[in-house]
Image (cartoon, rainbow, N blue to C red; front, side, top):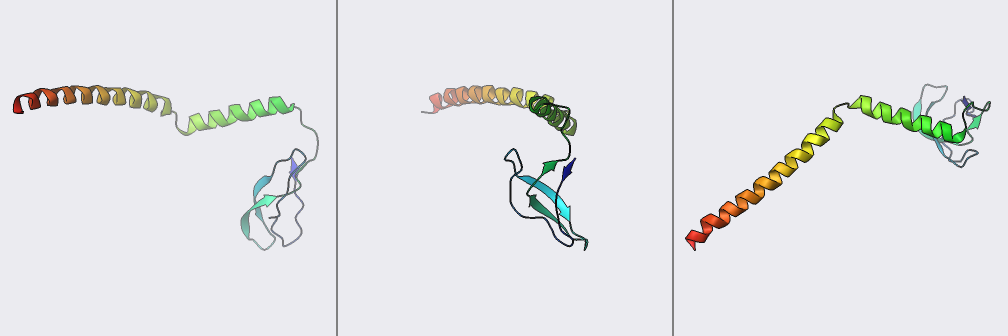
Length: 108
């Protein structure tokens, strides 16, 4: 868990860095029901985590890659077919260019 100190009726938007030098960005709301996107200063861990920094970074990277894949599972297939289509078009362009030269050879 991460704690953020915000006074009553305030929207935490001040710029700052946490203990490891990162700036936190969060969607915060005040007591009056206003919501805004703010840069949060002073993120402090309430208790130490069970993972080391390297394990956490790997876990986060795996999670992000999984979510990106689940967002569009057909992306790999689409890229594969896209490359094949581009090679086909390039080959077809070369054949068309050779045919054009063959036709224009007789015209000149």
